[in-house]
Amino acid sequence: MNNRFYISAILIFLLFPFAACKKKENPVDLYSRLQEVSRLELARMTVGKVGMISDPDYKDAKSIEAKARALFNNMKIGTRLGVYSYDTYIVAYVDLSKLSEDDITIDEENRTASISLPPVEIKTDGREPELHEEHSRVTGLRSAITPYERAALKSQMAKEVKRDMQKNAAATEMLREAAEAKGKAWLTQLLENWGYTAEITYKR
Image 1 (cartoon, rainbow, N blue to C red):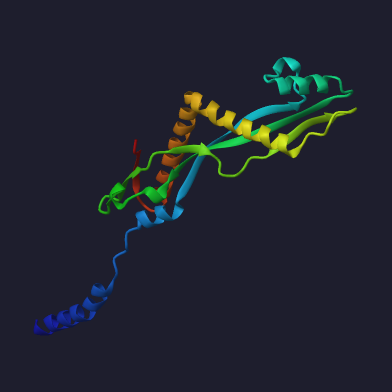
Image 2 (image 1 turned 60 degrees about the horizontal axis):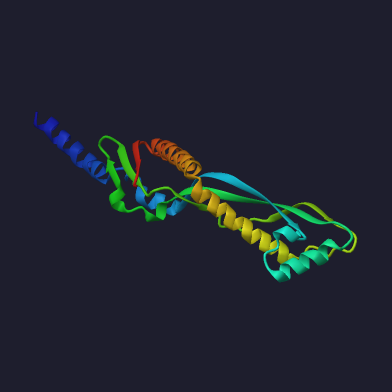
């Protein structure tokens, strides 16, 4: 009896250090991992514009100088026409760098994670869109289309794109909804891979 107790005590003493030294698996640091992503682009759409460069008609001239120039151009022989397209990307994204630790609630016992994401932001792509020449025809005594004219047309078309987006609230809302759905699906799958059931919401 005493011998069995002694042996049991020895085994407990020998096994205890291993039990004490066994490390509990650390929970995933969701905050740091999501912060590392920073800007998460979720949806985009293309807005296209077509513009034209030509010698102005007399009826379109506003000032006396413009009318005189139009009369002079009308007397020239030949054709002067340039057709250009301009495609701008409108992107919807979540800036995860704006996420705070208070936005994430983790229940390790039930393996659930609740995240309140920053609102979806929408703006034109940061890259400068190019002006694409679709057609160009300059003949006779007409002057060539200048880089200044192309730059002015590009600037005008960029302003029109922004104005169109501001007016078209329905298209903007559709893009926002698509982005929110994609972001929710992406994060839900990501958290499932890490062993969590996710609840994703967006701030307004």
